Image 1 (cartoon, rainbow, N blue to C red):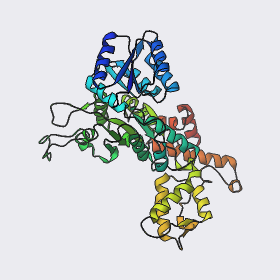
Image 2: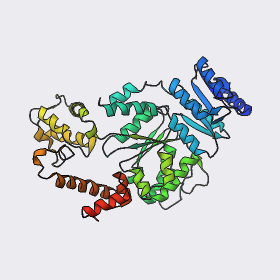
Image 3: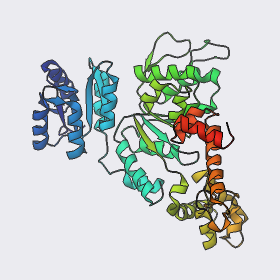
Image 4: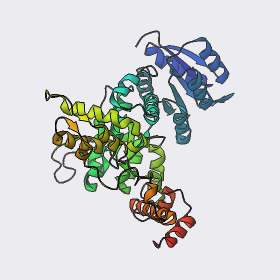
Length: 446
């Protein structure tokens, strides 16, 4: 680290300020101290800082106000909040406001040094944009917004819940958040929570000791240990059984894990990113997902838009996929006939980007003369834009019947996705339970 790097310490307790000054001084950092919010704001106006450490409670305000002040005026300065032990709600509010990370009192010096080292490795704001642009294609408004959010979240250690439909690119988004942040040189460990047998889950997540169960022929580290210093990406987190949710919550809260058959806990430093195609709010309402774990994972929600919400990107994405398929073959990439482009743009894509890739791979193989016609795409019937909400008015004989049919399809879909939990289905459709019950009776679904 460069001796010129400066850290602003904001705390009204002299002992805490002195402890932080000594620790950071030994790390060859220049420190400036402030006793309150006013002094901190004055120092920020005079000096350029690389990091700010602030207590939550200040004589003339709160650390949260300072986080917001720095976010607005000095967004390049990461801020870490120091909170009382157990005051999790305060820490979560700080992360939501834009804090890089948080520490609890009494301050653990090892944890402090790790946090400072990580914060000082952050790239400048916007520095990740070019790399994100290359990996996350599309110039539609939803994609420009998504790239901007990834750039911002890469500068934080806050847990992020990535929501989105299957095939929309949630794991790619998680990788980009990891790769553009200070943990980029450490492991990114993705795990599909729905693919691990329940009886092996604890061993997979936390590891096991030799002889702890039949077949445990040697010590094995778990996914948390494998991700130490880096990022653990929990895909399809809604599929975790409730018993495992309790253990996961404890590991996240304590920042430590105990392997199966082990006697001691191992400290782990991981950033948690998670994703699911399910509606986690509905899963909590249906009591299939713990509310306390939901609040720990969903500090910040990042929604990945489905492909049908960014139709303007489809031609760009298709061109990229076809060039990739042709790479290494020595042959030019196949071209899309204008009618094929229009067919793609009017298709609903229930499988999103993954479905587009599979569709083009098949069409690329079957097409004649390196030109993909609309027929080569073999689009599934019933998923065109007209079926998805842009009806051909010449085909509607009775508006009431048409609307009732649309309503029935949407309600049935919501019920199936929530395993016929009427309360969860009503919430998904933004209906009151009373309204849902009335509609079920009217449509003969009661």
